[in-house]
Length: 225
Image 1 (spheres, rainbow, N blue to C red):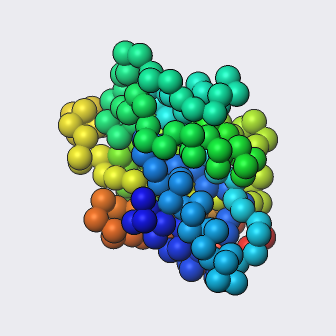
Image 2: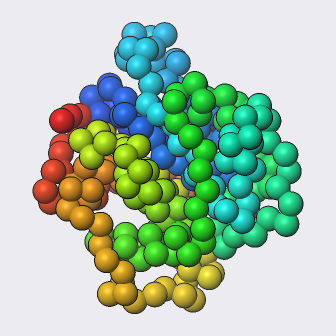
């Protein structure tokens, strides 16, 4: 849990000791809890104010205990039956500390949402075509949900949004076997690509920051619209 805090500290530093408007993370474990605890620590130290980002917990439709509990208004999640998804990091029928994930998502004004495996695959292909990234399915889930939230008007294109791709597609055997031709899919529009910050949190703490698409609307770390 303590190690997960570093994600919150690192992007707060990258953004000039401010927090983004929203954070999207594929949630199989406790990362959202760690980030939320980091925000509280930083406020206690006087580094940031009380404002918090909306936290969005993303899971797979074939294993979605958190979105199900969120939709039903429950404080805890039940074990998800017959869990199936090609995103192995999301194949967690009963996440640890589920009650804290649900509590912090609600306190932040965010949501817990599920996407299909096909949506993940398409999103991974788009990330590869636009940025040359071989993203993990879990990262594809986050980009897929970002597009859905944007389409529903829940993400303002002028807002500062952090997406986590928490792995590489090379660690997923199905992703390696079934990389689809990028030309089959339309790329996100320039406004969307320019306003989303993709933080690539690699498995062993290596990281890189890329304004998605790098063109129209991209900003330097800490710069806000």
